[in-house]
Length: 253
Image (cartoon, rainbow, N blue to C red; front, side):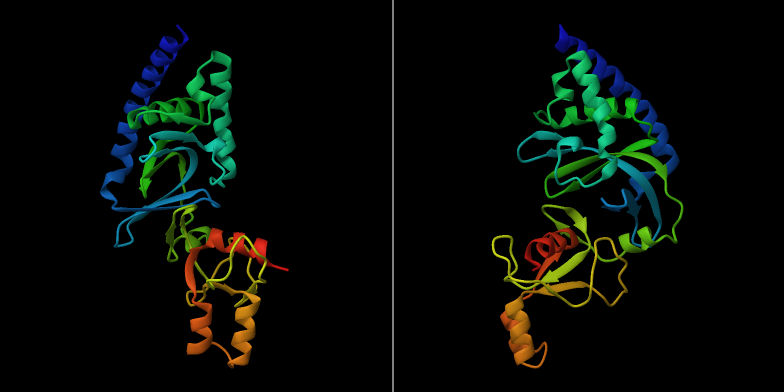
């Protein structure tokens, strides 16, 4: 009986979502934009075309769906979701606990892709939002509630977002960073940087996060700086900004 009650509730909220989303799409015409990028720290989504026609939205992450495992993961359960406002989705979990709707209380759920929209619809009915958006990256769908249009296009948040990005399998789209091949999470090797850094900092166009281990620094000094020999020893690799600061936290002495 409870399951039937949930199905009826989810169906009603889905119908409401379809109606509101049609009005949202009619106003903002997001289907006309070919690119997207979101920044977890600032909780901003950018949808844009190559000619810099763009719109920015503040968003709340609702959950992700893996096309490989056919599972839904609520954002409040997702350790890779660093958005602070994801905790707003706990109201959905509280509703599930109150009404005994298991699919709203379990962090990880086996389900069909179509059912994700039920979860999004229920979330939107409980959290104030103007629309929804789904991104697809490496077989992972990420569902977001869009809460408002962000109009301050001169802000440092937007300048940071529009810098070159890398698609990280663990952290999504983030700014690129570069580290030597030796840095890892198993053995502390030291952490030498091109300049002092902190997460979320603004970078000049010519700057990038770059770091190497103590052994690389010794080779660099012995060979009079970065050159063919020292660069070959370091064998620099590309990572994302989030990976960079995880390595920094682990390796610094």
